[in-house]
Image (cartoon, rainbow, N blue to C red; front, side, top):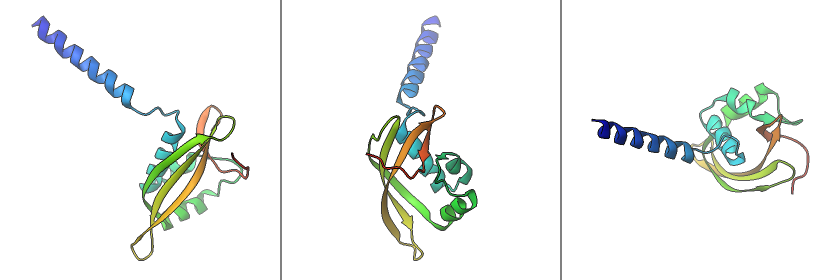
Length: 129
């Protein structure tokens, strides 16, 4: 009986270690962009808006109207690279559902940076490398 319990506990512990090790860190610029796009796709305005920081963040009602008007259907992170002190440029390709029901391909580069020791999507009027 003790042998079976030991095997069960060892298996359970191994599974937990593997799952924890495989989960993406929250403190990762690409993971922040994933969370942002997932919030936009699910129309979770509050979550997406709370991830924005900077002097050019639109008013929340304007942001909400834009998200509701433009349905993002999918996205893919293409590249990310350092863009200054604790900032990363994350290049994304995404599709928006057009008025006639067709997906329109788009791409953009978001700047992700640390503010108050937390990663955020930065909306600033500053050049990046």
